[in-house]
Image (cartoon, rainbow, N blue to C red; front, side, top):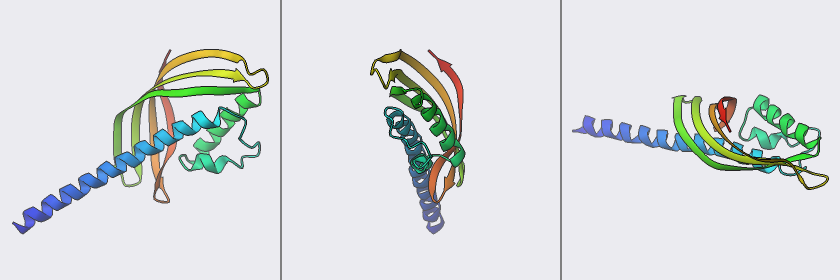
Length: 155
């Protein structure tokens, strides 16, 4: 009876670990996407990468730099993205080990670009569905995105 109780406790504990870990991983992906939305709307990013730490809360330095440069390149052309994540479906959250996870999502976005000088629409609304592959690593007890791949894009 005692062994059965220990076994059930181990199963229950590992299930809770898996659930909370999966939620933490999903939270990282959602926060990363929210950061894209908020950071690309206005010219609030510094030109000298001082704001890079905000991106590194949810992404590795390499992923954060790539996103930062992408946003700043649009903004230096006076274009600001007005985006909304309409829906995100986590089709797979695979915890490979305690330090590495893989996530697949289907994301429905709408976005347009606004000219920051004239305040007029530069590029009209575009509705896009992305199938995404995220790879996450654990750093300082937090999950961060280490690699992102667009599997498909459908307009």
